[in-house]
Length: 434
Image 1: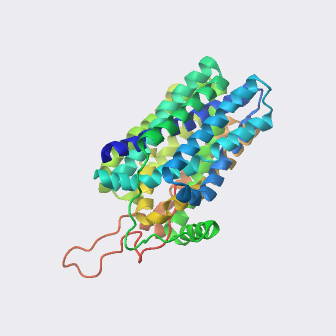
Image 2: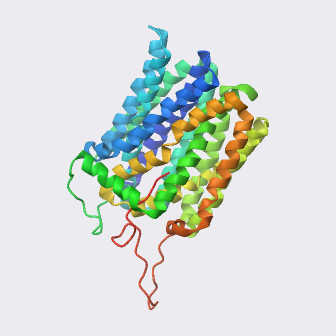
Image 3: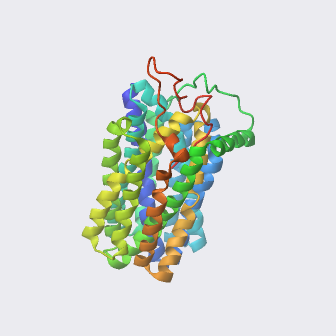
């Protein structure tokens, strides 16, 4: 395969794998509700599904570097397939106690972050070989993530409504299997971007020392300490919305799983268009101001409308606005990360940054379910909307947030040295991830 087709194959694998993740997010809450579970039970299931994402990100990155990036992608999808198909098989045969459901959901998510880290590490090398600018390649990669929501959410909602949540999980297992097979057939032999003179490849010092080096890298950069703190909070609130509040809102105020699938798919479709379009203009716009404006819009409308108890047309309209804005966020953060992380450390740093940013997600789903039982679904949406908006405006304070911008390069004859490029020996030595 030539370089362009190899890059397209990577994006295709990402779409198929992420589609399985989206479908799982739609189906699992309705498995719980179909078994007589409460809003709190939905929150507990969301907690079990998201804790392994954090653990896998924190401890799996070093293993990805040793096991191989393509093999990590394949293995993660196969584990997801096996655990998901086990849920309906147990339910239809010997029975599925609640602890077994939670355990399988936990195991299914444990390797998701390492698998995606492996694919993300391959992106710069494939983009460079294809002659694609980094920011555009990142935009396309993030657009593929959003496109998976557009595909997976409506399909899963319709499937759950038509045949039930357990058969829907069996179909989702087949989707993960297809992602693994596609990676085996098209990505074997893909290589990462070569290390630069500033970031030479160093031999492994052992698992725990490699992990410690990644942690030190993440802890020292002033910009990404702020990024991790910001995204940790917003991801917590997003998790409350997507894994608990939206399924409950759809079940009680809309038309159930079909509505949830349409809402999630609309958001994903708008975010896909936002990522795709932004990839072509990302190198022309200021990063920080664009990031703040889009972040505020990504949460505000999609939270305020359910807080007011409005119907499906209003929810869909808000999802279009928020989705288009959300499409710009990960391309900005992804480009900054790839500029700043040494190639030899990318898998472990991606995993650690993801773990830090996602650490609040398990609590978010649990918080959403408990709060909905305590003060109601719409009131909880209102609280989340206020906190989300306030937090996303924090980059306007300046300070280390200014490091998000592209370094200025001194023109010929301009006095003073050019600013060091991010990731160079003179630049700050860390960062964070969405």
